[in-house]
Length: 95
Image (cartoon, rainbow, N blue to C red; front, top):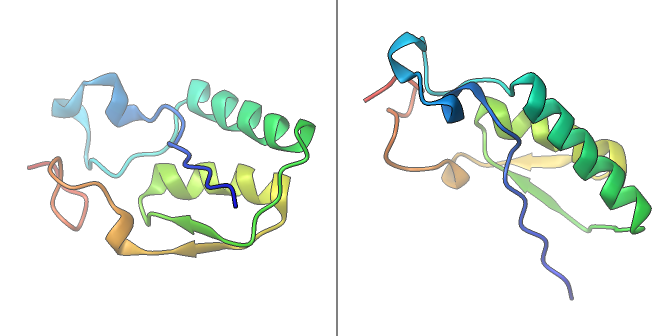
């Protein structure tokens, strides 16, 4: 069995300008989309497969998961328990 743990691509929250964000639950940046696309291509190139794809409900992880879905064809299973802890309220507003 192989377990692959994937972190989302760069998001606007990773840029550190939290003061100007409406929410900590942000989308991927252009670079983040490029990173997720590179992940998709790597998964295809290495002929990876999966039985399940568990994904946080945060926007950036949902967007990254779409690229993984494109590579593997496995529908994401979204789970709030996989959300990061400590930098935002459950509704995504900054602490």
